[in-house]
Image (cartoon, rainbow, N blue to C red; front, top):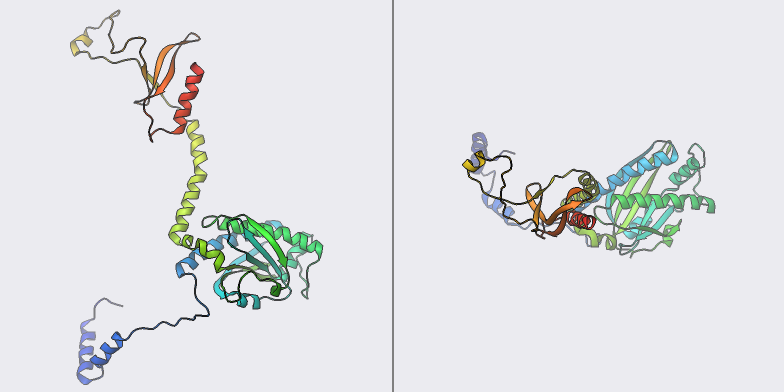
Length: 345
């Protein structure tokens, strides 16, 4: 829409006012009326749109990691797509699940409660068939898992949770731990029935087998970290992580970087005429005696004090102290000074 009306639009509006088609008083009344926004107290929205967008970016990383892992694990291309992220009550989530199903109840060292990772049995049996050397067929009629199948899938569920942890590391760090595995949704009560939850749905396609993976987070588990669920905080944490990963690499490169160290024995002032008439054998008097401490410079700045001498027939310098100890001094320089001092001693 344009910021200003054209002359034709202005003429049309004035004509409507003159003929009475537009009532000025009615327009003012409509503008003065308070705008009401409907709010459902039975389904309160716990998280803002910005937080949901950040939540979506995190789980897009989870979907990509899961697709890569399953493709390698099953030796077959597996397509994993992130579906909708909904805010629903815990009772609605349970009603949406089939019985039987595969539900992993998990928690973490920094989580204030439990969450659920649920996978359709169609996908589960397709995975088991591929892992055991089959072509990835699923069962025609859902059934509960046997003990052998349960042990196989428990290991895969733990790997799924590890990938979820890696995707969430920029927002919150936790070590996943499986509390229990259930097949009947009605036996799983990790939150009140009316508590709002964040539901993440991923669509998994393994050949002809299609199904869904759901991750349900009760609001009581997410709320302590909700302030980190913003784009600004997410990118800041991501940058901080990258810096922490690069720090050892930078330090390793600095350890191999040659540094020029110069020892300043003393200073003096000469006139230009004295400099021109210098000859072999002349003695220039410096501002230090031979037994005084001299400056040890890194680059052009004096960093240490030392005593000049010889060691094993070569000229050497023994570090005696630091010139200054403040924030500009890195711990590596202090360690270097201590090593040199111990070596020369």
